[in-house]
Every structure is written in structure tokens, then in C-alpha cells.
Amino acid sequence: MTDPLFSAIPLPSSLATNLESLNYQSMTPIQAKSLPLILEGRDLIAKAKTGSGKTAAFGIGLITRLKPKSYAPQALILCPTRELGAQIAGEIRRLARFLPNIKVLTLCGGQPIRPQISSLEHGAHILVGTPGRLNDHLSRGTLSLRQINTLVLDEADRMLEMGFYDDISKIIRQVQKSRQTLLFSATYPEGIRKLSSEFQNDPVEIRVDEYLSSEQLHEQFYKVEGKTKREALIRLLSHYKPQSTVIFCNTRQCCKELAEYLQEKGFVASALHGEMEQKDRDRVLVQFSNQSCPILIATDVAARGLDIKDLQAVINYELFPKPEVYVHRMGRTGRAGKEGLVLSLLEKKEQFKLDAIKDFLGKKLLCKHIDDLKDIPDVSLQPLMNTLCISGGRKQKVRPGDIVGALTGEAGIAGDNIGKIDVFDSWSYVAVKRIIADKALQRLKKGKIKGRTFKVRFI
Image 1 (cartoon, rainbow, N blue to C red):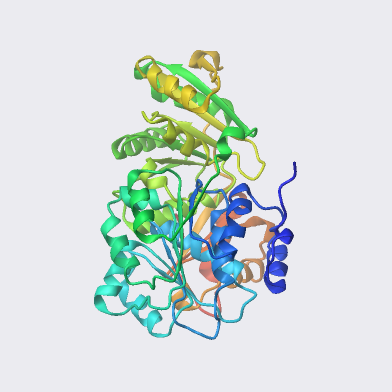
Image 2: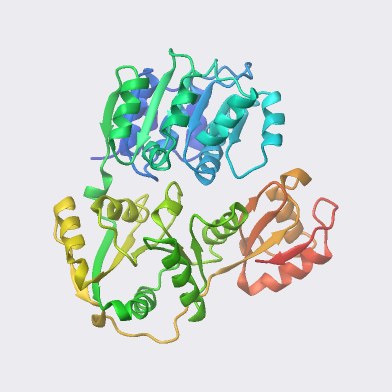
């Protein structure tokens, strides 16, 4: 059975044309189930994981209710982290680009509040923010939510885990009762039920458990001895040679120690955990997403809400006792019809974890011994790309096209040697192929971007 098409639902012609230009043709299961209800104006509780297409579902819905001539906030999307907020805002801008002058503003922590206050003074149509920062603005009187007609709670379970229930409640009470409220969550803890009963109006409940029917995933467990676990991990990486891998640990300390160990062994790997400053998190995520760092080692808390495209492998260095966590982890690979690897290291004392996962998924799972894999020496998975950091960003009016022009113009570098470009407030990152990285660095140092000279360095 083929997936339903976006053309099958009643959308404004200009929106439908824009979706087609963005290659939105077939709807994902969560989109097919939720979008017709959202367009009807119904409140919704939707169980769906990161990467299921839910942003487009609620994004398309809220865009159809916008009044472009009014610059009072009309839609509010609450999310747990700054990274997820930036992803959502970027996707909403793409979906709404057919409308003139639509302003999407992110109000997240980890950033100075003064520029946000200044932006709010000029108005915005759509707000994307974290609960703590939104409450800061409400307490300062710099934000009014009286004209919000669509309220979205994305990754609601994660926000509750972070202790945001009271903050969320305060925010919702500032929004008119005649709003539409859409609640998206990967799991259904009691707090979700409480939120829904208190703030939603006759919600429709839908569930999309795509992982149960995924045919793109290759799952394999390997028995290991605790004292040889690190060596076993290297054997996995050497055997399968994934070009992009997220390795999950249960603690920050394990993440840091494992990253240091892999680096000592010649691998390019970075840790992602809750103790990192925002600028360091940004740098790590940029390098991983632009193929300059093939291995990301993370806790579930740090990785929650990150939408990582084209991830080839997930490795459970440490299995979590709850089988739902295993499902969330493996759901990050094998997306959009692509194949994915889910590899797990299992110590003898952890057999109960494997049994719980088998019962939860209702299927057999293979478990081999790590010694069944051949030991391949001298494999360190060097990245395809290197990342250059440029000391100019949005505040200096630097755009991705300006960086491409500087590299392909005076620098004389072919466009296919340039990868992903990320522009932040005061700096920018550009990925270039390793074979021309030194040339790109020297040319940017000696040349100019938009007629100006910037500092450039490798990261």
C-alpha cells in the first residue's frame, strides 16, 4: 500500500505548490493521521518519535491559520532545547516561504535576552521557544500571548522530564482558551495525561509506532566482557565502518571517557553531554552534521530532540534498563527508506535488558559473541570533510551564498568540494573536503567575504 499524497488533502494552492517544490509528496504515517485533524481545528495528542515528520504536520496546520498582515504572535511552539527550537524554526520558515514577510522568532535559553526583546518589539507571526525563556519574557512584560490561536507542545515528555510542568502551565494560562492545542510526545507518562486533561478540549489521540514495522534496520547484539568493552567497540567500528555513528552511553562521565579513548586510538570523535556550554554544543553538532566528525558519543538527555539526518549507525555502548529507550535510540537511523545499523554491546549481567527488549518488540533478536567479528587493524574512520570557522555571522550580514562565492570565486575551489554551511550570530562554519581544506583556509585568510576580511581557522 502506497503512502497517501499531500495533494489528497485540501490545502491552499500556493502552499501545495511550495510543498511540491520542497519535495513533499507522500505523507509519513504521523502526517497522514494527524494533518486532516489539525486542519479541522481539533486538539490532538500524538505519540510520535523524533524524525517522524511531525514538524511538517503541525507546521502546515498552523501556517493555514496565519494572518500575514498581523504581526502579533499567532502560533506558539514549545520545545525542550535550543537545538530542537532552531530545527523547528528552520523547517517552519521553509514551509511558510510562499507567504510574504512571515517572521519566525526563536526564544530559547543559552542566548542573550536583549536581542530577543528587540525582535519582539518589531513583532512576529510564529514563536518557537523553551519554557524557561518564555516565562522570562512573560515576567518582564516583553511578550504577549493573547492572540495565539495555535499552541504546540513538541517533545512534551522531555519537557516534563526536565521539570518544566509549572512553567508550561504558566505559559498556557496566558493563551486564549479558544486556541487549538497540539501535544506531541514520544511516550505517555502521567504528566502528559494531566497536561491534556487540564488544557485541551476533547483531544483526539493518535499513535504511530513506526519502529515495529521497520524493514530498513539491521539489529545485532554482541556479547562482551566488561573489561574488554572498549576494544569490542573499536572492533565494531572497524568491521562495519559507518561514516556517521551515534554511540549512546548512560552517563556524562562515560561519554567523556569514551571520547578520550577513541581519540587516543586515532578516531575523530566528540562527546555531547549536559555539562557543555552552548557554544561547544553548537560546534560539536555542526561538525557531526557536516561530516567533519563521524562519531558522536551522547547521553539520551543530550541527544533528545536532535534530528540527525542520514545517520548510518546507532551503537548502544551501554544499554538502558527500559526497552523504550532502546526503541528511541534505534529510531534515529534507517529513516526515509534508508538502511540503518543498530549495534549493541551486552555484558553477561545485562541479559535481563535484552529479554525486556525482546518482550517489548515481540520479536527475536540475534546475539553473537564479539569474537565472531574479525579484528581489522588500523581503521580509524577519517572524516570526508574538515570544518572552517569564520569570525562573521548574521550580525555581520554574512550569508551562506557569500561564503560559497568567496570559495568558488577568488579562491577558485569547485562547488562540489564545499559542504554544509552553518551561520550563527557572530561566526559561521563551512565544511570543505579534506583534500582541499588547506587551500580553502589560505584563500579565505588572504581573500575577502562581502568585501571584508575575517579571521578563519580550522576547528
